[in-house]
Length: 427
Image (cartoon, rainbow, N blue to C red; front, side, top):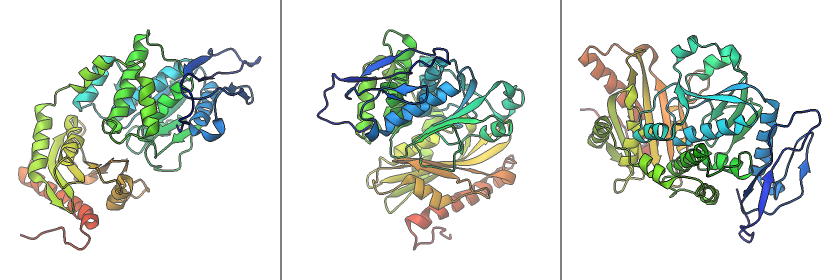
């Protein structure tokens, strides 16, 4: 949110619903102090929002649109769909949406299909009581989906969730998409707020809070924990605020009034498991460095250790004379006998767009779905192995399969890194 430096911080604005004689009262006015001047109310059809400088602020416009959408979906039951392996940004924003929606008698369940394997994500959920649930594709088969009137995508656009297609087939309409990644497809939802230039979805949701969609109260424990989760999500997606822009700092300043610093420190102090350390060691041993790119394949990983891959990329990008690191491996789910190539990219090079790089390197499948994408400074990709999944009991076959995938991924990456070189080196 772009603010005028000359504005006084003591000024305030509020987001409120004008009473409609034909509708029951939903919620009361929520007021929050931020650096915006108060302007007269602007009234729409049955609902109005008191905001400042609305003609210059997308954040205010989107807050108004979201409020109208929530009013239209009062008394519903919704599913909040996260990416298969949700990060702090996704988890915290989903919780914030749930709390905002409660004011409109909308009951939300936060679900994801993968697992929480990053130690900080596990600590975040356990220490704050964040209400996220794991629903596998098999879980869906035993669920009565007819009780849900809508679904919401937060910090993703459905391309990184195994659940979306089944929920679409069940006829559950898409109510909202709120994300900060580059646009992946033509999204048809009642409300869409996709801002690729924003560093974290947590910044977008904090702006919703600032406009009064939810009045945080530091005396309410759940609000304090949610603000702490948002601060963690914002910090995580801006590389400890080192890649933060003005609006991210403004969001952090607002959250600083409500979050629990001691709780956040406890989340950040969570220890890495031995398996994560083993994957980092493997990435260091297997890496090749060309043109300031560090590329490492780490072989097979258990499904529960998937988050070791981005942590290894975070580590490799800190090496001297390296501006971009890509780490990948074959992640296998023993229960479902499924395998997928998963990779993470981290970069400190300002002129490298992770979203464009990954999409150009790996392309898209037969349906037009890209195998990966990204945001500022980071990206990821997932490539299903299909018919070649499983059957790894024979160690020689498993090794041969890994060597083929390893060579193919390196070839696709190095075609962009070293277009004149042959990445497949013969013995």
